[in-house]
Image 1: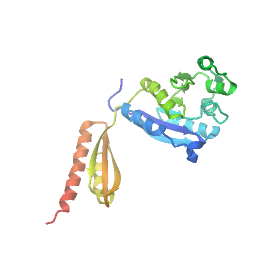
Image 2: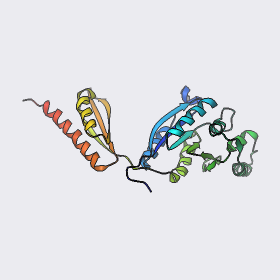
Image 3: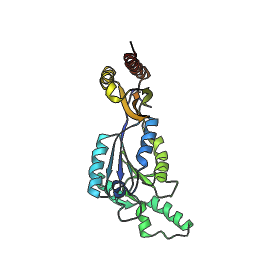
Image 4: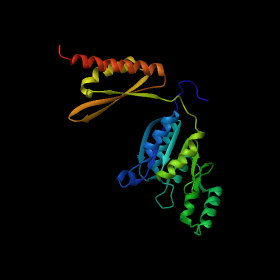
Amino acid sequence: MTEKNEIVTAAMLAIGDELLSGRTKDKNIGHLADILTAVGIDLEEVRIVPDEQDRIVEALNVLRQRYDYVFTSGGIGPTHDDITADAISKAFGVPCEHDAKAMQIMGDNYAARGLEFTESRQRMARMPKGATHIDNPVSTAPGFNIGNVYVMAGVPSIFQAMLDNVIPTLKVGTQLLSQSVNCPFGEGSIAVPLGNIQKEHPDTIIGSYPKYENGRFSTELVVRARDVTKLTSAVTAVQAMIANLEAMQLPS
């Protein structure tokens, strides 16, 4: 059950040198943001760190204390630079072990495909002692959950499939409602009155997103709130602001 106006927060830790070098273009951040927003969890911070254990541990320990949930992506594959399981174990102060259930599932999968369950492949069965599985319907090798941290693959199709299994288990908050208002004026023209509206409606979040089309500046204004009455009140104020600016431009 969700209490009225309860806020549930989350952060994401994306792991991988390839993300920072630009070799891989991240697709998981946007997907996670979309899903969490839809269910009523606020994604409030995203960090990207290299494949360095101390950097992963440092970031994770900050995020897991600050937010209700932390989701990680990347670094749980079979190669030497896949060190996420080791880093998570170190952050929680527990051993990183070959999980018996993961070894069985993966061993059976490779045997059925006529492939050897090599030592490098067995690395994907390692996780912190006491962690629970996040099922992987795409390629079998599981992610894992320990405390408020959910560790998933970096491959987008696998990340998304794992996330589908995680979401139903989470506590969610009151969903943010939103409404867009198209404004024919640039941000410079609306900054002061829009700032005043935000001050008068402190329980809303008003975002402005500038556009430049056909030689003219305009702005998309997005009002967000958890209460429909407060949302409507702020939207009405924004619409009145636009109407007032339009009236000021009419010839006398």
